Length: 477
Image 1 (cartoon, one colour):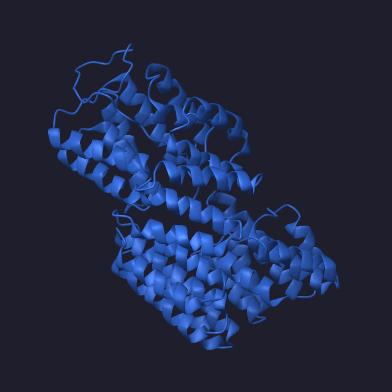
Image 2 (tube, rainbow, N blue to C red):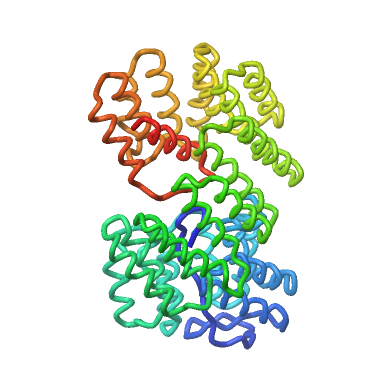
């Protein structure tokens, strides 16, 4: 299940498509208020795809359901959640607007529809515990629905606290594939072998859909079993359902082994099978990530970032244009081309008066790499100012940028203090810790931090900070 973040695995089944005219507190199945047959059919197809974790096609079906019946509140709320969380074509603001309207429309339907629409909206907002509580309430009204019951288990996947509840659920529903997916991700950090077993079981129970194989491949990859992972990714890509993420998984396995040309070939196959322009842009970013990880092809790296910026411009995504342009400044800085780096920083800031905070981050790094300390510290100050009023700013990236400047200016002990409050499971933070320790002559500590990165096979090629951290950790050996 390769998605931008491990979201709440939430879905809703339905047992009756007959419309009702009023809410009923005694409903024990989900009755849909739409009277449009095409909307019902699209909703049904979307739920089937979602239960099998085919997110892209599910999103398309929910969107079609809304087009068939614009007043179908539950379908709209789910569409907003899917399009805003997975691979849809909506911005966060647009997705929230869809979810808000969906809840308003669903409130004129059944109690169950209203509860579920509200649950999806909270999940979209990131209020996973609130979403889980709403799903649990809905499950009391629809006790036979396994999808809703699973959605109410302890919030987002990946939390070890969900494991006992998931095991209890599986004991009662041993033939239900989706539960094994959630269990696999919830187990991986504490019990990698158990996670692998759960992912394998999901693939056994649901062999004809791609995502179970993708999940199994991903867990195998994280466990360092590259040939076995590649085999599962190939199975995912070969299913009848179009699934570009199988190619993305193959690209990760190849990149981790240093086979960068092959990784890019797979990502081009992912692009050819992309469901949306936004997904295509994501794979283009991943190609740029392969150059970042490779580390010895600055011209190709900069050219790919330019291609990303051009595609983002064609999609009228000003934020992505600005960020890709700012990222190229760091490439030029490493190559010693100060003029091009300064030009890229200026171009990134000129895209939009509301400069995205990552632009300040990359400008800080570019100036720091060129040892231009005054503008580097000015950019860092701007980044900190934005962090004070914007909860989306990554405080780990702020700390990492400040620590980098401290180490580079001869103050590695200060860098360690700065990083002491950051997330030490973050690759970028770990790498900056290693650099500070190395500058202090702490060879064992530096090697230990770098080894934490080198021995971790989770890879997101679109996350340039972690990809660059991985490259630096590898070359520091």
